[in-house]
Image (cartoon, rainbow, N blue to C red; front, side, top):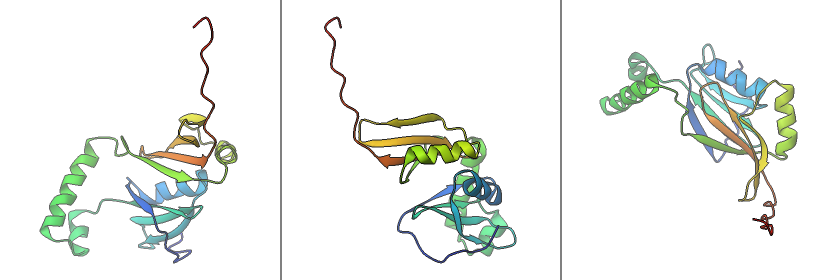
Length: 162
């Protein structure tokens, strides 16, 4: 994994806690089509930023207590870190979290994912709120919703025998 391909910053991003940054970053690059923007440290990354169509997703591992102290975390920050580590150890970290990422054409994106052997949770669907979306789960259980703007489907009209 390269340490840095670009220093360009992106206005919005989400940080997802993962078990292994190298493993997750490979999934995001190879399967979802993201590009690695930067990672730290180069020899064994514990943080990475990846970009798709100008949108960034950051991946990070929870540091150990020793690493937290090396990073300069104070006791209050370490207590929050301990709380996060306990919650992370209890179960699937991604449950209840969805990240929406806009792509130019969700159907074309779905075809790329199929070629990369990524099985979506649901096939592409146009929602009543005017987006066509495709849901994928990453290796850590986070739900990624790739979407494109779309015309809302026409409301169904009731039939005479209803």
